[in-house]
Image 1 (cartoon, rainbow, N blue to C red):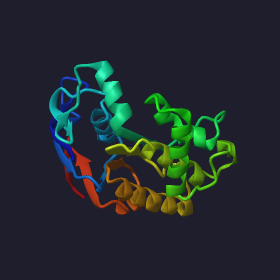
Image 2 (cartoon, rainbow, N blue to C red):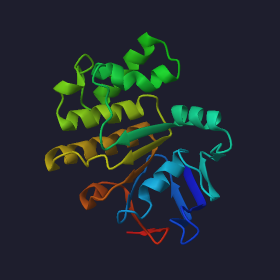
Image 3 (cartoon, rainbow, N blue to C red):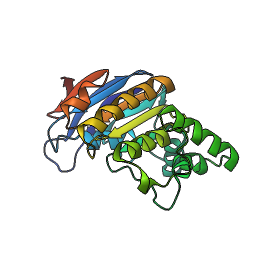
Image 4 (cartoon, helix red, strand yellow):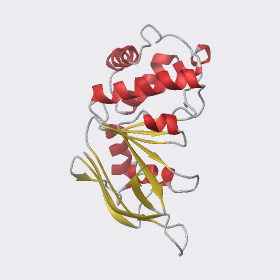
Length: 219
C-alpha cells in the first residue's frame, strides 16, 4: 500500500502548496487526482516519486518510508519500485520498441536475453504483441502510449505514477489507453496514481480525489 501522511510543501514563506496531505492507495487500485492548474498535483506526484522532498510528513510504500535523506538510495528505490507514464511518451527514437520497453530492466542489470523476453511479454500484455522490432516513429499516438505503459510495468513496480497520460491523444486513442492502463494496473497488482485535467480520464479510475487549498478531498 502507498501511504502519504501529513505531507507539506512550500515554495515561499506564505500559504503552503500542499498542506498536510493524507492519502492511502492499496495495491490493485487506480486513483485519479484532479485540480486546477497550479494546485500542486504534479508537485505531489514528484514527492511520492522521491523526485522532490517534503518539508514535513512522510511517504511509505508497503510500510517502508522513502529514503529521502540518501540520494543514491532514493534513485535505486525508484528504479526498483516505481513505473512512470508521461504525457509526452519519452520513447527513444533510435531504439526499437522492445528496447525502449526493456530500459528499466537494463538499469537494474538484468541480462539482455531476459530483459528482451520480459519486454515482449509486457508488450503483449498491452495489446502490442509482435511490435518489439518496430521503431517508435512508425507507431500511432495510442500505440506509443501503450508502449510507455509496457515500459512502466516491465520491471513489476509496486507503484505506477501517471502524469496526464492521455494529454497528447485524441478521444478514441485516449479511451483505449485508459482501459489498457486500468487492466494493466490490476494485473500487476500495483498501486497507481494519476494526475489529470481531464474529467473523462479521471472517470476511468477506481477513485477520484480533488486537490484544492493544499488538501485532497473526495471529488
